[in-house]
Length: 271
Image 1: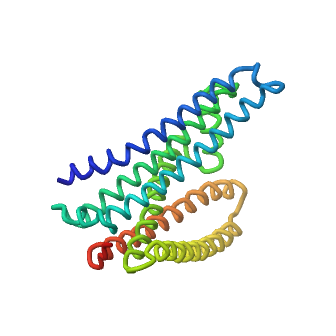
Image 2: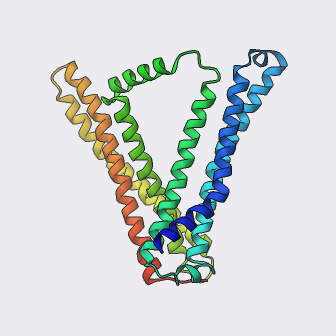
Image 3: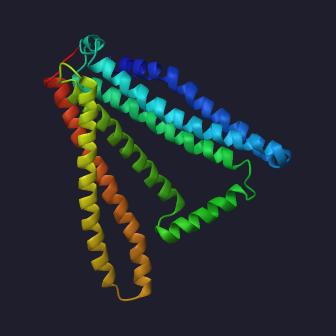
């Protein structure tokens, strides 16, 4: 039953989001071709590449906005609105239903980000004069110099950060909806209010942690004996900052998950 629930949730969301992602890739490919044509780079015809770039940027914004809005509306309708009566009568636990919806939403949100990055790379190839190998080599050198990580390590760290942040963002929205469904009236305004409160709390905690982290790093930096130690320390600084941000996002995500699960299981208030 859980596998069927995954399949149904994935296919229902895919009906809208796959075409949106394909549209972005198509716009990027068209832009790739247009930017390669020298005739279109001069005179009045230069408006064509500029227009393609504007359309591309608007398509990215549309993709992310529609993805976020659609996932939010679908979660609310299938969990707390009239469709929730069917959802909560399925022969699976509340945790299973919640996990399926969260994992599916995280997948599509992360997919939108990956597609956006890939489309930007495709668009860049339209006017890049350097080879792919040279770009990667230079990028690997710059990253290893500044951060102290090789390119493949940086990509793994970026992938981990993307997944954790997607989970944290999705869970923050879903926890807000779980709080909003507690109210008999004005559920959506209550959910928006809960989201604002969560956001403010998260920003305050982030600011306090960053201040503590920054003070500790300054004190440690002042005690370094030489320049070589300073370079090594700067590499470690970015890695420590990365871990701080990653752990903080994971911690907030865990809190939001517990809140969402508890309210959905013990304080469910369907329309």
